[in-house]
Length: 111
Image 1 (cartoon, rainbow, N blue to C red):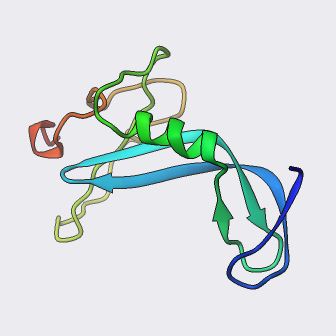
Image 2 (image 1 turned 180 degrees about the vertical axis):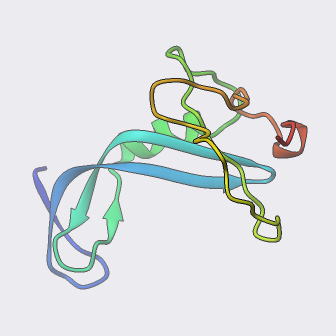
């Protein structure tokens, strides 16, 4: 199916690509490049059954990415902030901690 009707506003949805983010227990999962349907008017996003099943595998905590993991910065809302004297991430290098999928956030050292 190439188009779908939006369940929120009833308008037309088109195939698109999105980034899926979900927090489960103490882990945060981010999956980039996920095929979806997005509403052109209200922005509602839905996934077909095959994509939803694959997303549940990605976020199960039982699989690891084959490619090099992406950098993720973890902040807690109550953390004090300070201005960095040099950028922590320029997009060409990875200086932050990379935790395997399923690692509890509390197990990732804070820098």
